[in-house]
Length: 267
Image 1 (cartoon, helix red, strand yellow):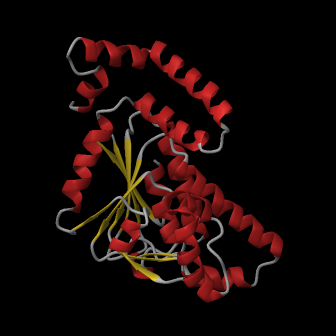
Image 2 (spheres, rainbow, N blue to C red; image 1 turned 60 degrees about the horizontal axis):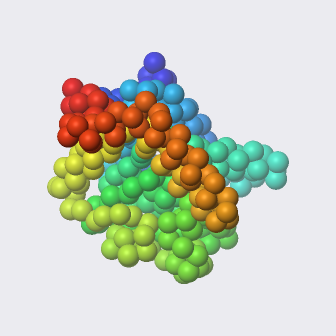
Image 3 (cartoon, helix red, strand yellow; image 1 turned 120 degrees about the vertical axis):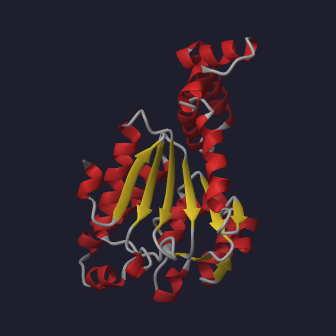
């Protein structure tokens, strides 16, 4: 099984929920080339598995993810441009796989998310953080920039906020991250699992194909002109209305009963 081959991640599936846990607490779950490859493998598996309905991403220990691992950075520092480009593309591909996952993703931000770790928050659909969580785009302090994560952070926070956050590299409180749109809620650590369980229940009660199509809609429409969006959105809703899931959902609503997928989610 894939979960038994992983060195840097814990990957468990139970009750239609995949739990992906960064498992390097001794370095605050900083990522290296191995973790990047393993996250890509895990999210490929998640995309293929019809039994998975929701994904919860978190970190083991006190931190969510402290960004790039120092030992990995020492190696990368001496790489050629070609080698740097190869590893950067692997990071960019991994982030996109999480962002474009057909399954809804929840970041359970249990502590600090720094640099690329903040990018791992941004690629998730919904992010819930504990009150003590801290965030930072600290790359400029190292003479670098938050390049691969920038498309997703800008989508969440907007260019104006990102100009402030990216250029200053300031440390953000959970409340400031919430006000910027990076996270969706700030919860006391004792309450976060209950809060996420309720969120998971809401997501599982929705049609899985509708969720998949809705995520695709969110990715595509923002890049389209109004005329392109007019045609695309009309086509996608017409397709869903005649689909098996769409027919079941509309019939269940009209017959005042739960749709089959909601009954299945309750066992």
